[in-house]
Length: 305
Ligand code: 13P
Ligand code: SF4
Image (tube, rainbow, N blue to C red; front, side):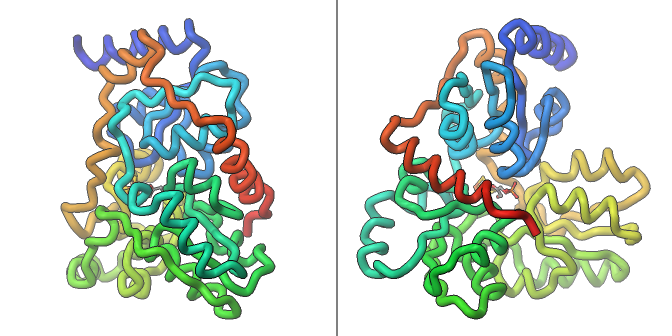
């Protein structure tokens, strides 16, 4: 079946089944193209919570679909590829976090949404890359456990110098490998370019940035900035919308390794198959869901900067 036919069948089936198709900003171009909504983790969680549709087809990775199932338990949440995970999310377990909490009973646990529902259930409040600093500032405690991304953790710590921050040693294999030499090379080749970067990159990379933000923050920055060229420090799926929305601007990837294999798993065939069979379905056990929901709700109540 060719791509156009596949897309038409998906759209028709989604309408028949009252399904909302959502896609993360890193998904393949053709997946973003058929989605009703694309966005970063925070925007997609909010869409999942607010939609009146009965079915959510989440083209992303497992923790994102779990967040949708946590926020919208009455909906059917489908993840077209059950094997689409996030290595960073897998670097912390609920048991490991419980042990760290025992060592620091006076700390507040701030957990990045790139984590399992079981880990969120052990947390006081969640954050995403777009609200992490606001969340950390909103917390009264003077000591924070920042889980699981050490790079996002170190970035948060730099923004809340009045707090003691203890970072879990997790990382994103895609963002963590970006090198200073690659940025310097891109800057030398494009001296007028602005460098925008995701906070999952290492601190020495963030130091070279003109703007540090979530994936959706990059769309806003690129659209509003008078600059014509941007070096992009995040996963390459972001290019599709950046180029579509800014045809007069140039976007440079500093490294060929900025690819998340899990985000590239979902293909049109998987989306069609999942709508036809209404699986794989993602659910969260109710006792975990209630606690994870509290941590997510606290995050959603924090005013944005
Ligand atoms: P965003 O919340 O910025 O979309 O990031 C999610 C993610 O997985 C980044 O690697
Ligand atoms: Fe996880 Fe990194 Fe992929 Fe984001 S880019 S889903 S943090 S592995």
